[in-house]
Image (cartoon, rainbow, N blue to C red; front, side, top):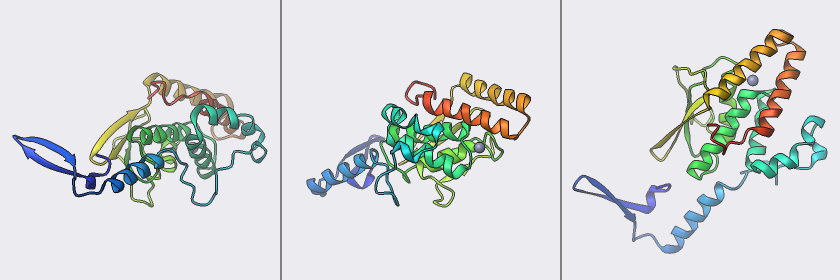
Length: 221
Ligand SMILES: [Zn+2]
């Protein structure tokens, strides 16, 4: 029921029966299904003709991972995380996990950007709230689009509710991975001091590790 307009529903003995609307011509059905499926496989570029994948355009830390990471997780995730880092202002762990989760949720509903409404439970305080930026940039469910809200109830395990066509799924990071991330951040603060240059280098290295190794299909969520 991704496009409700195509269906008619009736209630029989309290059971909702759904069937394709026979008034809609077959070619319109095919076209609509085609458009929707394609939206989930394209990077939906507004400015770029195609998203840059030439390794020479990337900084050293990243150029060596471009091809491998795109092959492993796809161009949609690569674009989402690259854009997240550019806009968020640093390469962070929570923001990258947010981007991976956003892409995973779009795959679940088989839709492209700007289709879901998202509620996050990551609050408004960094570093946890950095997660919200990854969610917004990967899904297009941004504050500006009015497609996201930040719940007052905060969970220190990164989680969000994704809503599409009255269907909701709640996705959370596996608790053991969330704990591991918290411990790694604590270690960084203890060893390098909070927000020092060395701390940021350490966080960037960690974030690259999650970007490269965290497979959103491996039951990590
Ligand atoms: Zn951050």
